[in-house]
Length: 140
Image (cartoon, rainbow, N blue to C red; front, side):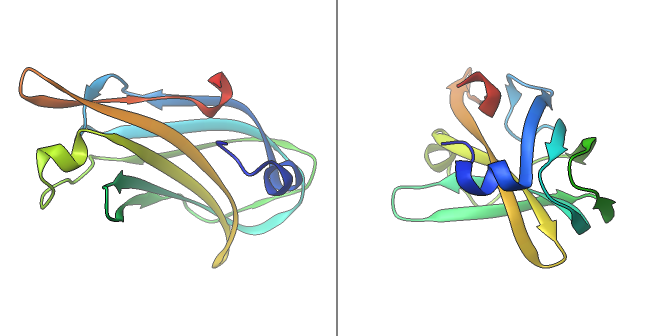
């Protein structure tokens, strides 16, 4: 599942998820925008953006960026936006990347993970270029 339901229902209810650009080269810039309702207060809210390369033997997380700290009250609707100038994939072989990966957007409360939103990412080779397609967890 895109969200572990029990934890997610307590923490946030996703309303909208947008990924821009999409269906583009893997290393391109990426902006994730989400609208959600909070199920509980998060005093030191920071959204953390990572890309997970899922290789046969191991998983590797690539840190992409974080939002500034904010405060969420329980039961209110909020929007967030986190972006990265690009996904740095140096050190990976094309066959390690041409696979299903994950864009992971994690809500932290200080150092503690509140909830992770996993966006399944299919990477395919097209004309000698690796192209990413990110799927919204709301379209399951």
